Image (cartoon, rainbow, N blue to C red; front, side, top):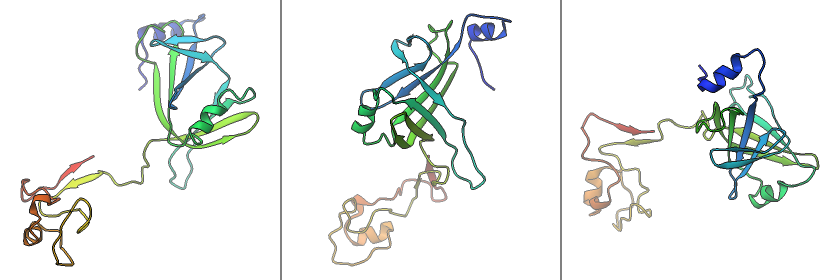
Length: 202
């Protein structure tokens, strides 16, 4: 459930108010771009967000199991941001932060809504820069990322991390094989963990 600050709740519940919920956009190029969907600039958390035309699409999902994504169209008539996109090589994998703040609660250090995305695709024409945003990782990738096993080395035999110099051509990646090759000091398993345990790291 969305949790709003006390000020935002009070403003939301009024029959009429002169406050507004403002969308802030951080495009985290090497030199961050901070813009807001508003008629004037906004200072929030010590940062200046310049009023600039852009629009947010809806989070899109389909029946094929693809990861959800979001499109943002930023005005490019002035070509003010195109230089930064080109410098970033199209901006792929650039982090983009979408926040919503209330104009009466700009002193609050926490935004009412905050979502983090990465740029998956960027297209540019004379009218718009369109960023297609997605999550920083695919839901189809392996989870957890790593496993710590007692008697299994994941290093490639005679590879850089293994460093074995034995004349033996193969290795079954156990500690015993590593000892036979006088290379146990570089064994890539974790012999100190419990015999029955496989520890995981996400």
